[in-house]
Length: 255
Image 1 (cartoon, rainbow, N blue to C red):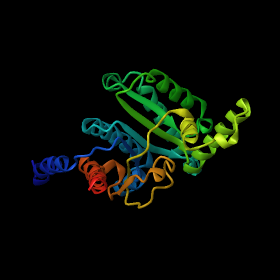
Image 2 (image 1 turned 90 degrees about the vertical axis):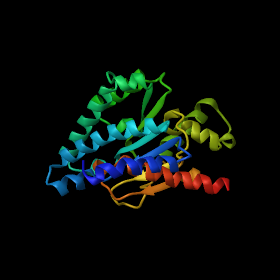
Image 3 (image 1 turned 45 degrees about the horizontal axis):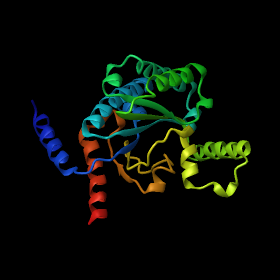
Image 4 (image 1 turned 120 degrees about the horizontal axis):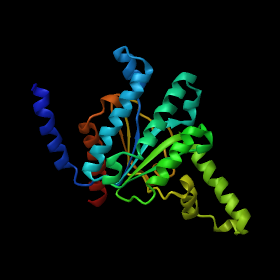
């Protein structure tokens, strides 16, 4: 074993001791799959596959640390402008992952609920069906919540909620003056009850949140952690460092 292999577990233990407050909801912008592939001379698909493998590991770390809700920014509304072959590959991989929920033993063991955040009307029918199947199969689970931001846009999120509210007002004849913060939150994400974001993590050395979950994150002043590693190179140490930033904010608020 090299020196890094000896020191990293010790550093992880030190970080764990420093994280006295664990966020309830962590949202992750998984950036850098394509740059990772380019760095290694691989095709873009290999970068996305490596990113998907890292996601599996990260979810294990999150569950182990006691995080209850994780939202992953997997495909934005802007990503539809990417090359057709890349979009097709991503959709096929997303479909594979949603269908795997139906047979994954961890989903049953940890009682993981899988939900989509975004605009399903923008998805191809086969992917939409896979999403619905995963949501239906896990709808009674309450052990861990995994939200997949797919065909997602921060502004579009607010537009969709506004449409739902207007439809409710039209059908019920409710007074528009009754529209308040709680009503907006009830209509966000098709009423899935996703809690406020405590911590946003972005990989790939990009220092912006890309309007991710604006109501639940910016509206609740979540902590933000930017880190350099491309998503496939993200480590448990990086997750713990992000949680340490959240812990420090909690400590400052209570002092």
